[in-house]
Amino acid sequence: MASAASVLNVSAYLFTPIDDPAALRPVLRARAADAGLRGTILLAEEGINLFLAGGAADVRGFVDGLRADFPALETKESWSDAVPFGRLLVKLKREIIRMDRPEVRPQDGRAPAVSPATLRRWLDRGADDDGREVVLVDTRNAFEVDYGTFAGAQDWRIERFTQFPDAASAHLDELDGKTVVSFCTGGIRCEKAALYLRDQGLDAYQLDGGILGWFAAQGDAHWDGDCFVFDEREALDPAFAARTGA
Image 1 (cartoon, rainbow, N blue to C red):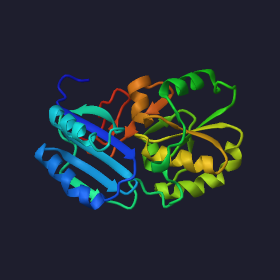
Image 2 (image 1 turned 90 degrees about the horizontal axis):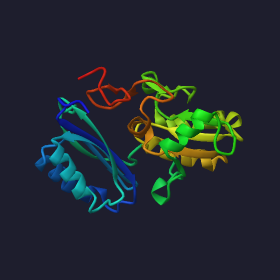
Image 3 (image 1 turned 180 degrees about the vertical axis):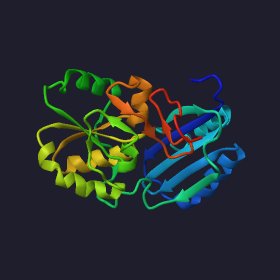
């Protein structure tokens, strides 16, 4: 990381049943505020999603406290010179990532995941370990894809994630018989997407850790451009440097 960067940015999500998100909201807001953090925490009955920034010890201390309730929570870290959020928000949602398909329940069990190392091997050789064609499906919104995506990835030009199921249904024939790997920024959308695709009879997987996990493990291999992020940095390159925005 650049030595000048002193602000730790962390993103994390976990699909897990939360019995009373409303009761948890003030608790987490107080903890984050006491730590001087800024960003957003989303809570729903299906789980938690967060993007936070602050001093390294403060951010990691808050995350350590979260793991008392959510031990499986995994984080992705990056650094910046300034906090890329204006304030702290803790929100209650019906879904931590809206798909409007209540039958898709990753809190009950996630779809199979492909590690960055495995996907890199598949892409390098042009097929999966069984010799089948691999199709990458970008589950993000069109404006995000325009910042950068995997070379050759499917881009269905959706404007919001709720459109993904219908877009997928329109492309089922061309995905049939292939190994399908869905991906997104940090993993949350492609986790639901892979479950939906498997429900449609496809051999679908999610990229474990999403694009940010890929950058950390594989850099810019098979990637063109930057990755849009939902904060004032706007986009990160594969070395996690902000190329535009704050």
